[in-house]
Image (cartoon, rainbow, N blue to C red; front, side):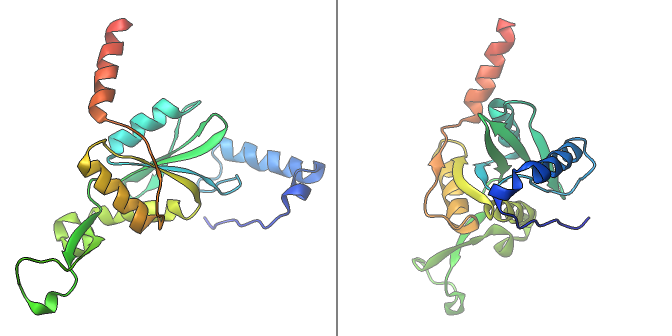
Length: 196
């Protein structure tokens, strides 16, 4: 299906004739007749980035006012949710999407190496080729995001993963930080099961 782009004046849009069209389109989208990734909103949302797919689902379930909508393609999924009237997209990485490599490999192997750069893992290591589709999805979602939140594990490795995604994939200098630990969530779920 093709994409639909509307250029409208929002003040005119919410007057009666346009508002009726908006309601018809909205009803069609909620019934599932239009399957493309079409956002009928002001094209801005908060992007929450997690370290792994299971964490993205847990966070989406925890924050969503109603059931999260799972979207995506080629095995890479993200969650579209509303929390307190705010649009949020929860996307995931699969570990390290970036790695360190030498800037100038023409010199050959010389140690120690101090002249390094960060580069996407898929371009350096064939075993990491599967990370490319996750990186592509995050870059695509970052284009329309207004704010960014890193929700990777709350350890040094999680900090590096989140910081590199924010710097290189999202082209941002900084982001909010969510203190999230998958171990803590598992403990809470385990304990809640005994309360029921």
